[in-house]
Picture (tube, one colour):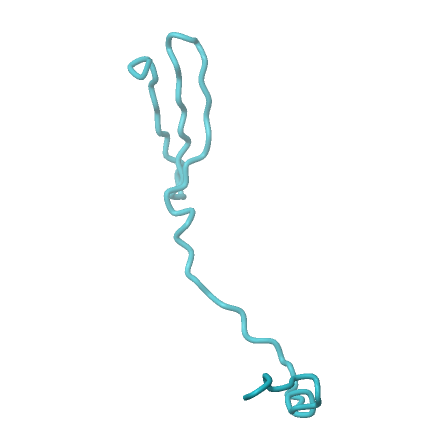
Length: 71
């Protein structure tokens, strides 16, 4: 079955993309799609941290956090 599958790559001018067509000769069927080898080659970038004001009155012990017994 694999011998009957033919793959053709057609480059698209001006881009790094290609049209990839696969044809199965025994079944008289096939399909095409766009192949982009650079699809995942994107530089990593992170967004800046959000502006959250520091609220010391919420960080101090306000009775909601208690030490464990015996400690």
